[in-house]
Image 1 (cartoon, rainbow, N blue to C red):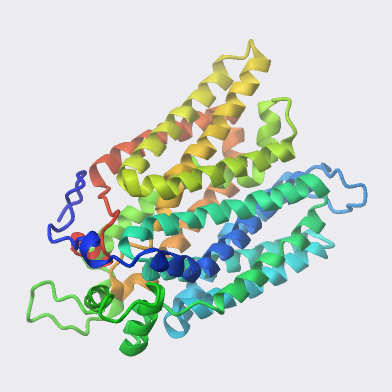
Image 2: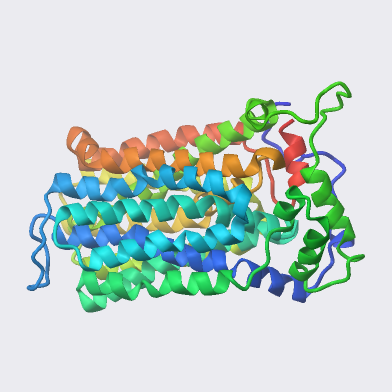
Length: 483
C-alpha cells in the first residue's frame, strides 16, 4: 500500500478516543510522572550536546577568556572533538539493541547515565586533547544508549491522544538542558566549572527513573500479562482494570504476531527476516529521509561551530548570551509544538516548518553574497533569520522526527528499529558536523546556507506525497497502514 498525502490514509476503523479512553486528569498526571525520567534524561543530553560548543568556543585558536586555562585546540582538533560525539553514538545504539529487550526501558534509562557522569568528570579534569576526545566518546555512548529506551518507553506508556504532545515535550527538556548549560557558561565563563555543575542532571535522572513503572508493552512481550495490566492501570491514574480493558486488549493485539491474512504463514518468523517486510521497510525508509532533512535544517550539525558562525555574521552582540537566547527560542518552539501537533497534526507542521526554514536559509545565503553594501543592516538581518530557523525547526520537524520514530514501527521489531534508526540518524549528523568546515571552505560560508535551503525544498516535495498523518492514531492503526 503506497504512502499518500491525505490525512485519511489510516484504516477507517479508528478507535474513538472520546468513547473508549476517557481517563481524566489523573491519567495525564500519571503519564507525565512516568516519563519524567525520560524528560530529565533529555536535559542531560541537551547539556552534553552543547558542551562541544562552549569547549570549542573557549579553546579553538587560543580563544579562551579564562586566564587560568592552559588547553588549546586547532580547527582540525575542534572538528574531531565535535564530530566524535556523533561518530560513536551508534555504538551506544548497538549496546541498547542487545540490552533493551532483556532489561527493559526503565533499567536501560538508569544505566545510560553512568558513562555520562564519567565523561563530565573527565572533562573537568582534562589535561590534554586526548582526554577531551575520550570524554566526547563516552558522551556519545551515553547519547546513543539513551535514545532507544527513552523514546520507546515514552511511546509505549502514553495513550494515543497524549502521545504526540508528551513525547514532543522531550524536546523542551532537551533544549532546556542546552540553555541551562549555555547560561551557566555565560555567567561563569569557565567551561570546566560549567561541565561540573551539570552532573546534577544524570543524578536526578537516576532518582526519577527508579520511581517509574515498566512499560506494559514490554511486559506483554515478556509474557507478564498480569503485571502489564497492573502497570497500565497505574499509568492511567490507578483506574480499574475494566476501565482500561479496551486499551489493554489493543496492546495485546499490537504484540501479537501479524499473519497478514495468510493462514499458511508461520507465526514464528525470524526477527531479521521480518525486517525486510514492507511494513518495516516503508517506515524505515521514511524515517531515514526524515532524519536527513531534520539534520539539514535544524542546525544540529552547526551547534559546535555556533561561536565562529555568529562571529562571521558580524552582528554587534555578545556571542555567549546569543547562543543562550537561541536555545531559549528552541524551548519556546518545543513548547508550542506540544500544543500545535495535536491541533495541526504532524504532516502539516513538517511541511510548514521545513519549507519556511528552507526559504530562510536561501535568503541568508543570497543576502550574505549579494547584499554587502549595507553591512550593519546585513549583519542583523542574517542573524535574525538564522535564529528564526532555529525557532521554526523546533516547532515542527525536530520534535516530530523523534515522535515518529516511536510510532511507525511494528511491535515485533520496534526496539531494534528504534536503535537502528537513531544510530543512522547520528551517523548522518557525524558527517554533516565533521565536514561542515570543509564544505564552508569549498562553497564559501554563505553559499552553504543557500545549498541547504535548496535541498530542503526537495524534501518538502517528498513529504507532500509520502508522509502520512499519524497524530491521534493507535500504534496498531499506524502499523496496519504500512502493511
